Image (cartoon, rainbow, N blue to C red):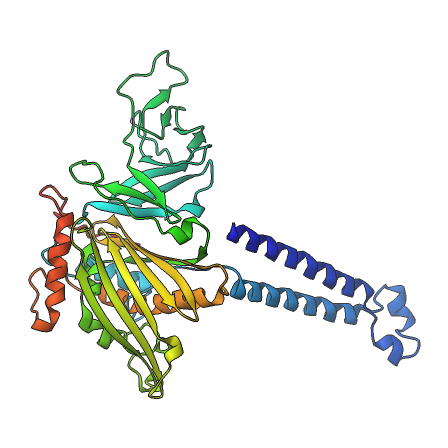
Length: 460
């Protein structure tokens, strides 16, 4: 609702702006009419060019004004959306190579180490709810599988295997929604979203009982559609909690970022327990950027972030959850700025969802939904979706999300180039890392899939 009202406001502003500018152009008077007394030479008037210079200036001014209005609207009202491509962040392109070439070379040559299973059991984000309207069909890759995601005419979202069991057509590529079912684009077979059962074959007298596609357990909460994965096909034993402020509309959508990480999924949440890396990697101010070769430049050392962090696992009945408590402070030229002090509670629910909860006396309250979804064994899609108090100017949560994005992209440069070490050399100050690994191991089963081999042609 908030996004629709902002879109309507933008359209109204555009119509008003165009109307005003059109009026100015039609009624503009050329100053030369006054300066020259009689105006333009007779030849100009016969050719219909009288007043042309003034109208040209007015047109240029109008164009610049509309561009400025559009930029101002996006800055103040539109959600911030930064969607990075797989090779855009975290790689160093040297010797005339493109970033895509550098990324592909790293993926081919990097040693992966002795990896844990690649797909932990748990809930994973598929997409944000606002990205799937009624009657929409999306083709998505999750956990090494192609799935068809669609929303029925009654508003419920469904996730089924993408390939039709008849002759293998992709249901999400050209398929359409019929009621609460999805229709195959090849022969018109229809599969019910609720259980995947085929309910209609247009040219057959009878539908076989065994004709069906796999239907994934899914849930929609906090503005996101999630699916359940368990290597043994077990039913969900826990769910992702609802954030009441989002459901009630008190916190509204203010933007999202998306990155693709070339690493094992466990590397990403393990950062929460790696307390020592914060002081080294994330202390330089966000103004120093994301390229680790330059973040410690003396040019920007007058801005510093200070962190105090504590990580701990929760006990029954929420042993699938953990918490990281963060206290952030900012110093500029050695002076502490209390206004920007912020306490953050990062609560991880399972292997793929984290609630980053912000609570500030002046800047307001909100949450960043940090979600990690495996696309394939060593490629993770990481999204940060922010919901914030509706009465706080959008510029505030957009700045918070942008700052989070900069800090996160510093980690991306590490993850994209590192090797997983199953038995790391740790000191006693690193004890939380080992605790985190023991906690995370609960999401693996004996049959959890492992990476048996590595392709040499995983090009972007």
